[in-house]
Length: 77
Image (tube, rainbow, N blue to C red; front, side, top):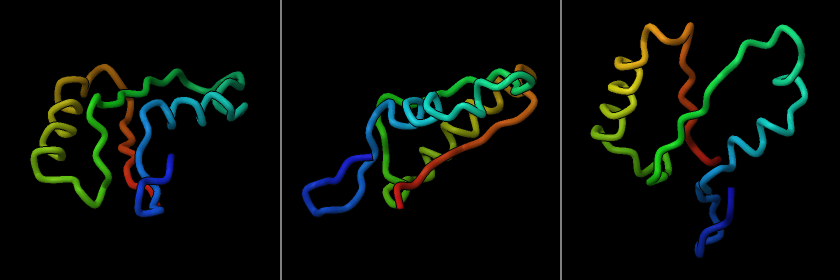
């Protein structure tokens, strides 16, 4: 996360991946493999629109049988 011109947190590409790679629990034996899907255009959760939610739901639908579960992380505060 980075601060924007107004002093609020703003999304930054790659932030989630960077932070998760620092967490040793995710690399421990027995932890299932996971993928992180990050969109090219990052949208703050306060700016998310129905089209953004439809896109996320579509991605889950397309990949539904490839994974045991899905987690959508959004928001900056």
